[in-house]
Image: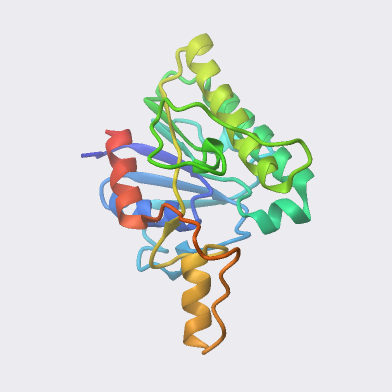
Length: 233
C-alpha cells in the first residue's frame, strides 16, 4: 500500500489520473498539476478533498513544475497531448508538449533527494499499427515522417528514451507505462467506446472506419489503475 507519501501528478485532472487519485487520496498528500484543458476530476466525489492541492500550470513551464513538485516522493507524469484529432490539428504542439514536457518533468526532480519513483505515461502506439499480443521487450515501430498518427507515437517514444536516459545518468528510479485504449466511467475527450456510447444514447449512427475487421486492445480504467498501483509499490 502507498501511504503517507507526497505525490505530484501532472495531468492530474485527466481521466486515468483522476481515477488513480481515488485509490490514493485518503492516505496521501496529492498535488494535481494541470492546465485543465480536460477535467475529469471535477466529476469525482473527492474533487475538493483536503488531501488534494491543485496547481493550474503548464508542463512547458519548468520553473512552475519544479516549484510545485518540491518535496514530492512520487512523481507521476501523465500530462500530454493525445488523440489523432489533436495531432492532426496541431502536430507542433503535440511534439512540444509530449517531448519538452517530459524533459521538464524529469529535469524538475533529477536532483531531488526524496524522490522514490517517477512514473511516465507513454502509449501502446509505439508498437506500431499491427500490434498483437505485444510484449514489453518487443521492438517499437514508427512509420513514415509526415504521417499524422506517428507524430504522437514518436513524441511518446522519445519520452521513453529520455526517461530511461535519466535513470542511466542520474539513477532516477522510474517506470514507463504504455496504456492500451483505456476506457471507463469518467472518460473525457476521445475514445471509440465512449464516442459510440454517447452516440448510442442520442440514437445517432455508430461509425466504424475501414471494413470492420480490424481489432483493438481495450483496457478498462480500473485495471489500468491496478497496474499503476503495482508500479508505484
